[in-house]
Image 1 (cartoon, rainbow, N blue to C red):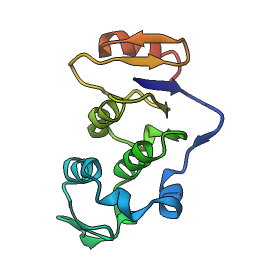
Image 2 (cartoon, one colour):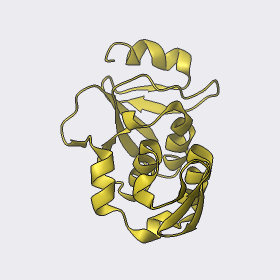
Image 3 (cartoon, one colour):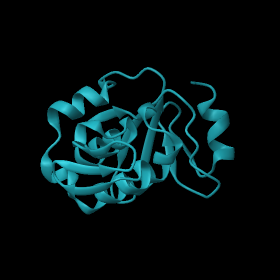
Image 4 (cartoon, rainbow, N blue to C red):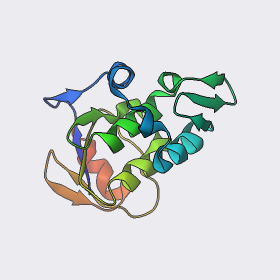
Length: 145
């Protein structure tokens, strides 16, 4: 399940770009889930663990991926940590839900992310309330962001 804490939260990794640059493992980049996220969010293709083909930037190293993709990769690969997912745009929301399909994932948000028109299951840690749609999420999240 995806667990979201809105606003200030202790022990959160806020600067995900710096954290990613100094901790990512090459095998993370070539994992099937990572390849899918990079293709979908950045419209780029993983060529190998050190080279991604971007339609905008050309051949780039993993540290030049978007902040959203880097944060998704961290969330997928370091489940014991809590990351600031406000570095992610709304195009990352479906991936946050996908990562949380098979295990509990906790993220910190400082904005109202759009999780789409469908149904989902998110626990808002501020209130310990479970919501299943944006209609249910917005009033609760709005109290904190």
